[in-house]
Length: 103
Image 1 (cartoon, helix red, strand yellow):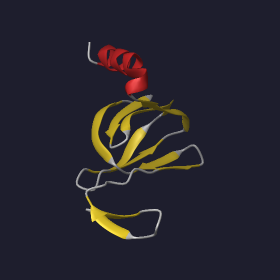
Image 2 (cartoon, one colour):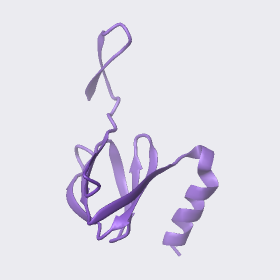
Image 3 (cartoon, helix red, strand yellow):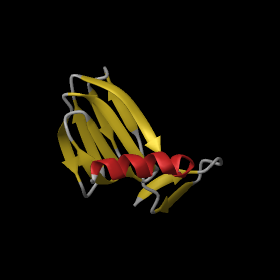
Image 4 (cartoon, one colour):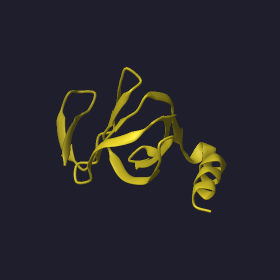
């Protein structure tokens, strides 16, 4: 359970899980709000987050830390190239990407 603030700065307690992506020097990512790690290899990670599917591409990617209970993932690599959310608007792209991985 987390706290969040509305526009009137009133504190509410609810089940809203925060989702943050913090990148340090294009070599380290810290991501919160991760529901599941769908797949990963040295060039791509696919994560299911509270804000939708997230694809991370880079070079020599490794999972540095995984805390399933808190929904936190840390990824390090030689270089991170891109972060892409695959949401309903791009449903076909997300479906195509996942189907390629699970053939």
